[in-house]
Each structure stands twice: as structure tokens, then as C-alpha cells.
Length: 440
Image (cartoon, rainbow, N blue to C red; front, side, top):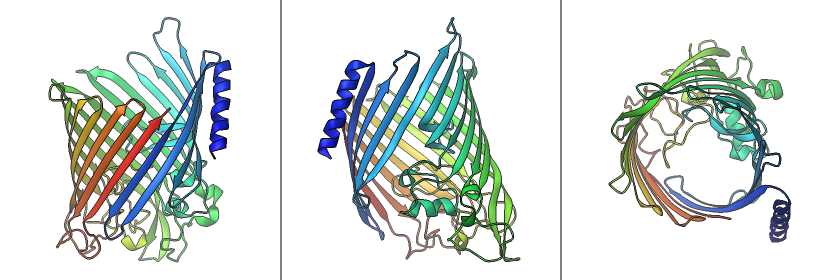
């Protein structure tokens, strides 16, 4: 391995000397321990090399590959990034058109519905009054262990199956409109997203069809297609107080097991996701930042835990559980999918100098409805909405520009005694993690 790395570095040095090339790399090491009734220890090391070049001064080509070692997966190679992009400004610089093709990160304007690497193409138009972008991407060529797309039972089984090499087969189209300072110096966003499940075309034998009369349990899933329309408003309110509001309406069709007829059907999806965040900057107080975020996602009272919970758990009529394409990280320890979740994230961060930053989060979690969520241990007989509270702490230390350390820890205190969780199934959980990074 050392000889291979040395050979690659030597070739990069020779190549960069002959052409207009920037290259580098980084090393990352992560050690984590989780303490609960399901305790474990994790350690992983990652080395990545990247290269960027624009030989004709018009197109820019970027590529990054990595190798990750962990205790449960000794060999994991991945193509993290490979894209070519062009910028086409007009002669008077009144607008800019950009085009990008390859593997790179895609995201909606909130990152709550879809934020993931994928293979695709993006086209953008930008001027002083409008930022517009449209993208089409496919997730079925990504390395399966690195995929965070888990919308259906089929997606979940693929990610958990060591013999499955690629991620869920989904085609995603995005269209984003951003109007800077449209009124009262507030930015306005519109987002349109469509997601098509390709499992039925590529793996038809693993998809449950409408009219089948036996309960497959957790072994197979259905064909899940979803569509989203979102709006957002953000900007400065007063002084150094800023806000960010967004709302998404979700539609589509999902698998439903009808217990009256004992057969599978496909029913419509009508759901919502909304959030508002307030951020107050105190630059004179050691660059402190005070934040408060509210996030709510719809649930469905007839979702069945025995039929998969939030993963295609609908049992009657329209499904109102919000299903994101890729779920955001809500907290360190307790990190449920968005469906049927309401949370309040109160946070405070301080940065006394450019080398140290620390942050504290207090996050109470609730159920939107008295219905299942994606996490285990919910008491089906409980009418409590309160799930529990998590407290997270983060300390970043960067003594040099190329060397960084990060220590983080979190504890989740579930509502167990006469609460939403069964007392004997969900205990206090904790997580501590140390990250080290070196760039070259």
C-alpha cells in the first residue's frame, strides 16, 4: 500500500509540473464509542487524493478518490468526486451560465429533502435578480455502504446487504429558483423536486405488486415515487438577527398493506415538512452565535410498526408520513428519519479565536402524531408526544491550517416512564467521538 501511494504521489508531481494542475489530499481518523443497551466501538481511517485542472482555461476538471479502513469493513474504495464544469459569462458580465457534468453533491436549498452525492448534470443561470438551476441525477451507481438514501424497505435491505455493491436506484430531478433580496432585503426560494424509483425496472422480482395477498413483512418493499414543492424566505430581521423559513409539500404514491382485504395496494402520499430558524450573531462576545430551530414533519396515525414503521408502513387510505429522499442529521445520538417528528434545536457557539470553536445543542424531540417513528422502542399504547431530549457538545481545535482535531459527545434521555418509549426497550444513550484530520 505504501509503494502504491508513493507511486501515485510521484505521478501527480510529474503531471502537475507539466500541466496547469492543483492536487493534494487529506487523512482522516475517527474513533467513536456508543454507550447504551446496544453499545459498540467504531474506528475508521480515510485517505483521499484530489486533482483539479483547467487546461483550456474554460473547463475545470475535478476528481477525488478515497480508501477507507474500518473495523467492520477493512477495504472500501470510492470515487468521491469526478466532474467537469464550464462557466459562460456574457461579454458585459451581466449574467453567467454554468454547466456541470459528473459525480458531485446535489442538494435542494434547505438540504432537508435531498442532499447527496450522485451522478448527473446541472445547468444554471445567474444574474443580479435571479439564481436558477436545474439538475437531473441518478443514485444507483454510488457505493452502497456510503449511501444515505433509505426511502423504502428495498433501499434499507440493499444498504444492509454486504453483497449489494451499489446504492438505491433512484432518478432525481431538481429545479431551484432563488430571488436575492426580492422584497425588504429578503431572499425568496422556490424548489421543485421529482423522484422516480427505478427498482421496478431493474429489480422487478424484489418489488411487491398491487393485488398481492400475502404480508411480506420486512423482506420486500414497493415502488415509491415522490414529488415535492417548496418555498423559503430568509434574510436579516433587525441588527444581527437573521431568520430562515421554509415549507415543503410532498406528494406521490406508496405501498399500502390493507388488513381488511389482506392485500397490497398503492395509495397516494400527501405530506408536509416545515421549519424556521433564528440566528443571532454576537461578534463582540468572542464571535458568539445563538440559534433556535423548529422543524416539523407530518406523520400518519395508521402507520403500522409491524409492517415497517415509517418505511412503507401505511395501512389505510392516503399516507401522510413525510419521506425525505435523504434524511438530514438531526442529532448525534438520536437521529430519526424526518417522518412524524417535531423538534426544537436550541444552540450556542463561541469562537474566541481562529483556532478554537465550541458549540452546545439542546434538542427536545416530539412526535407530530401518536404514531410510529423510524426509531425502535415506541410504546404503541402510549399517547405521549414527548420522545426525549438530547444534549450535544462539540469542540473544534485547528492549531495549524492543515491539522485539525474535533471532539464531540452527546447524550439522549428518552421519555420512558409512562412515556412514548417502552421503559425496558429504550435506555439513556451516549456517544463520544474524536476526529483528527491532516491535509497536504
